[in-house]
Image (cartoon, rainbow, N blue to C red):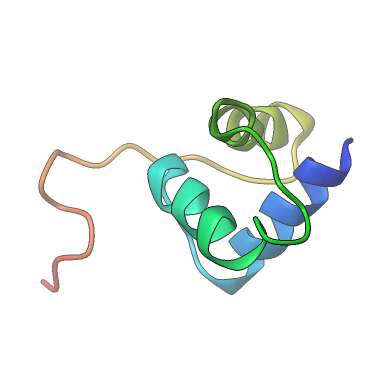
Length: 68
């Protein structure tokens, strides 16, 4: 795993994020001292799923963040 993998995994420990939300969190919190290309951040969640460190779920469009 790369250092980016560990950073994304740390963010996923806080709450389940979409890849888009993860990129935004990285941009807001880490870019000043640890800049990363957003394209690489978008690939990390799938890498973590493939390694067994994270799980993925599919939700219908518009369902993210809605209370039931």
